[in-house]
Length: 206
Image: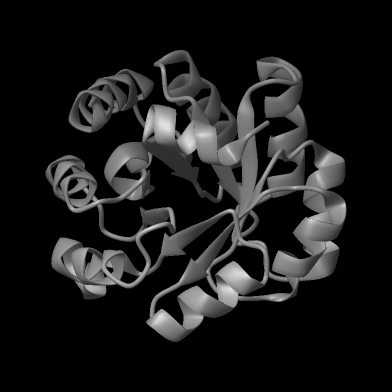
């Protein structure tokens, strides 16, 4: 899987994190069935590895399914063994180097220019601008000037309206958690989740 191509093409990454493994798995499958082409399962979820394994079995080998909040090398290996096709980190962490060793693309968390340089030098495929809400779309626009060739994926507080603003300021894609997933990860209404997925897909459409 070419993560950068997937991000450029689909422009939306769903972030699933929750305390109920069955509900989280249902949420993964629901957003995938709704047309969301990239999903990460946070390693802070209850039974995250089990969710990834079951989602991979259900979605097949080619679906862009990754593991998020991956910090340690051990977690990177465990996520890869469970079927994650890419890794997402909240910061520059040992998982970045381990992802490279495993041959997995990494969306590495960074906020400042110095962190962006370190992440890119460490082999990051793209930068997870996190938490994006601290600077908003204008901050992303400022970062784009010194880093015109770097792919940025803002994450943190991105709603449907904000998604369009970030993309207009040069984001390659946006990562969305609770504004998209809502209460579905705790057993909430999957019909409402489908409706939100449709709204987000419309918001990121070129």
